[in-house]
Length: 585
Image (cartoon, rainbow, N blue to C red; front, side, top):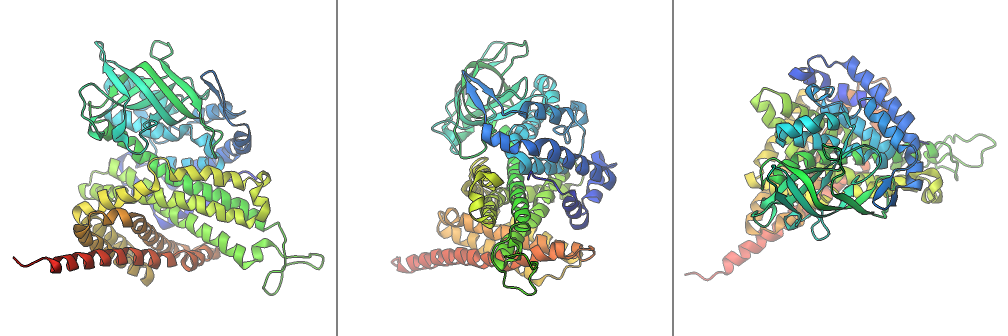
């Protein structure tokens, strides 16, 4: 069974829970964006993804990409499907009209990306970096680069890569050695090797725009000396650039996506932004990629849940401990769906999918608000949300995408471990999302050390107060969600104070702190869903996963909270003991 998007779930979250249409219409570029247009987009995207992209998922995994003398051939059907994708306008949804885009909210593009990940993540790796590359060039590129590359990237006719990692420099980008030498005509000659480059070479598009992190002569060591250069596969005069694919990796999953080792032999390129400020330009691309990676986790979990739920409603095994049984007089066993252990898996994972969608879609909405609002205070709130919540979503959603897909495989028993049912592919494909765009550990450190602690937790405190006020405004009286928001505020202050005594403490507890934040946000999201679902005709659609999530996942909150508090108490006690042991002068 191929993945099938269910637009009714998105409509509920967008309209009933988040009220996105009115918020988008308040932004000048989207004044005419209404629920009718939104609904039409969702329906058309669902048909395209379910009918064109999803059927290629299995063949992409089984056939994989082929490498021969520097050339990469995509799996059967992929080239035609990608051409259909960009000609139908899906990559251009949120690009600016002046660049050939449709000027629609980033929120809609995010949902389409989630569905593409759920239906065929190997395929979605190809256009996955388009939006980030487009925004990077639009914000930091010269007028000449914008004119030459933005229309092709906006439409998706050309694809893009993000060339960061080197064999000796993965997450530690300060060690990058690739060089870019300036030329008399204003171009640069790029030399060096990059690894783990998704879509570094393929036959899906006529050109590939490589954004290469490198060093120009005289730049200082470390991350502050990095620059960003655009080096395309095909030069403006039609000649092939000196960019070579040396190999593609043999991977655990994502067989349909070529992960390339690239070599630049004095390749021609042009600087994006200022010398030595490459990371600032690249972060425009990386932040977008991190939200889309979080949506990959949600989409892949939904795909695994769909398969497991369908299987559980067909397969009969043993007798379920419930009365009355659903089996007929000729049935020797009950449906798997009726066994409490399996019901727990399915309902809990759906609880994660639904709650995480609320948070991810709100983040996409905040990106639109931050970009287009004329209200300074509103922009500040939106930017604060995106800064603090993006690393949380990237880490937590990708972890749940993998862990939850593995749990869904369990519903199949031994049948889940063989290829016939396709759920084992989802488990394999989901694993890498915990590694790329910054490992989940780096996301946790980014959250706590770089985002929360520099202002003593004040920014996080403001965000949590805003969430509290939103619950009150929505007439929600969920005391549990309110309590967790308050506990997280207090915990943040505790960590900030204890960190003065031991600067290493935040790095030790960062993972646990991030989990506390995510579970708090999920409790808030489900409180909002509860209010919105009270008027739905089928309240069980939302009440069942809500109950499962609260019963089986939320208890982790107290465990993680306790871990961080005990670490802080230990550090504080040790600091006091050291202070008392100091001799009096």
